Image (tube, rainbow, N blue to C red; front, top):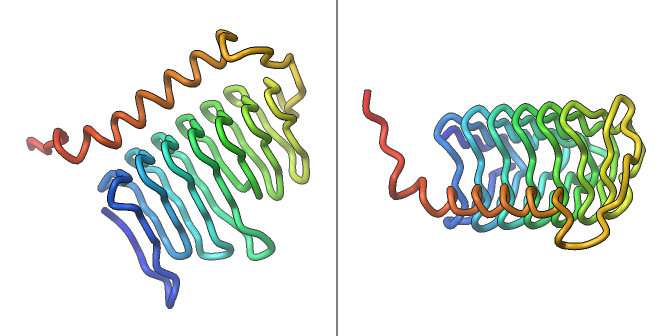
Length: 177
């Protein structure tokens, strides 16, 4: 793994989390149990602190960077899709960030909100709880009304898949070249 101390800032990674050897974690970062960090993800806590909860998926190419002005906090059971860029202040539990989405400086994504693929949540904005936001800039398309909503079911499936990977990869992933 490419885990880097920066001065006195040392990442804290729960032993039950999985960080792929091609991912990079720098500085003031905390990653909780059963969180999966995929290849080429970069989590850079050189400005402000980054806290990532449990059972969260940080997929390939994701960049998470905090600012000196605030802690970036990502909750539990969050799914962050491939190549998303995260500068948020807060992403609450069960939220999902789509592939290629940009969550700009000092934003808040409330519980259960889904930010669509390629969307831009502009700086200092908030995604309401259980909303589905799409576009540039992101706007509310609709709200999730129940746990059986197809969008919620799909995101829960992604979270389960990546949580399973956090358990599976340490035992089964083997480089063969």
